[in-house]
Image (cartoon, rainbow, N blue to C red):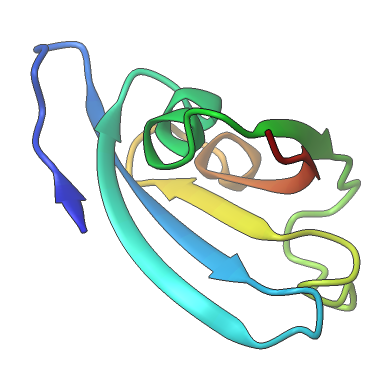
Length: 92
């Protein structure tokens, strides 16, 4: 899925998705203004919470159990600004 940019302020975000068993089930590119807005464009009826990460290079956390989404952009000057982890908190 590739959602095209509708605004000059939007950036390209890559979203990787895992299910509850840790199996990767999707890889998407979305144009949005923020990490969270990119997720909301894919799943407008769901709610998400940011998964805290002290060191974004530490990959010990298990996808699907600790977090469901890894949202990355290709802009900014630090790794923490580029990648954020989110967990789906509810489905509507």
